[in-house]
Length: 519
Image (tube, rainbow, N blue to C red; front, side, top):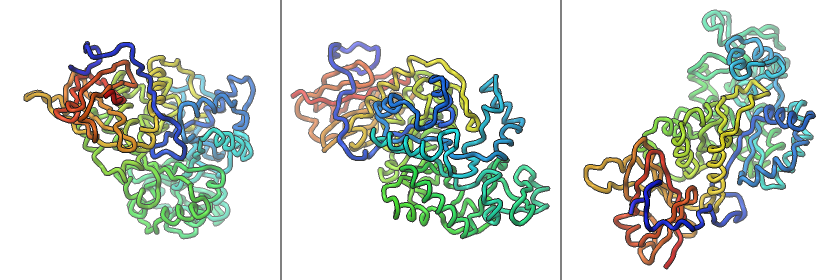
């Protein structure tokens, strides 16, 4: 019999329980945790509006935190909690191109809505409008009581235009000259410093113009590296982990290519220094250009998996499978996502139901499961990080129902701490190439079969067989219960091993089967 949404199978039991029932909450930190990114300033502005009064981080209602914990998250990343600089904020408000983008998001935009980029940091101090350090400490304690860890930002590459180092350690910045300013005025500016007026570089990566609200730090200066390590140590006393913005930009080879300066490695010594004081501290790297493995070797716990995201957008199942054959010592330390504050909204990028297929591939793969505020409601408008107010968007009921089901499923211990393996789809009959359109994997716990995940990542009907990679399947019969749908099947164990489970799915459809022995 085929397994296909909308195709009748007489072995389907309509009255069976297809809820994502499984063991949960086994204790300890999971092998594959989940993280929720929250735009702190926008979030608090919305909660204040709903409450009818200004709120700080200490005033967030218990019910809001309870809901985050109920959904199964392990981490809350508060984006943009640090103080931004007035000079950088003025650039955000006056830059014509940026302002046009802000007005496209908020037609009733006012200057008070533009609080400056959360990555143009004036000081690693909690913004007064959020309640300051005391409010953050209170929130962290309340998160911890619910089993939630707190992540904050660290921006290694640059600072705001009016950071205190300008008046005390301007040698911490990359300096230019009149020739550089004339040749690339978008990359340099004049600033008043402790050494008088100097031409300093804006922060940038080697492929794009400088960010005009920032100043570039000089990693060729050992004093700067020591100061940045001290900043990290101070941050680590206020949270449980940091997301390191554009972490690859300070790698010696990238820094040399960008600035022509020889810098010693920063991350290995800095990470080691933090962990001597805070042994369990977590480092997440925003990483691109296939530098994830290098950053992992330098001490990062997790790195963005932008390559998987790009391949999900590309739509080629073969490329996805090729990506997922990497060793688990690498994959376990990748952060899988469908959107974040830099990428466009998933609901606007992946048409429905392809959105569902991409989410199943991403979030049932090994690694850190990375979700973004608004993703569960189907938000479609990408919000610039310079703003502290977002648009009001209608909730998409279909998207919300799907993510409720998905989050409930990945709370299972099998998906949080089990063993994952890629399953290579097999052709069903000669001349049918559609087996190549599938992505499939198996999950097991304590050497017992647990789940099979299969996705037809294509725009047409497809068929394949899956030889399930579990020991002990060949005796008895098995019930396959789709925890994201309503399908239930019974199969002979010998068939599941060879020739394999027969799958027939419509375009972009999927199954996440729980395996139950029935004799």
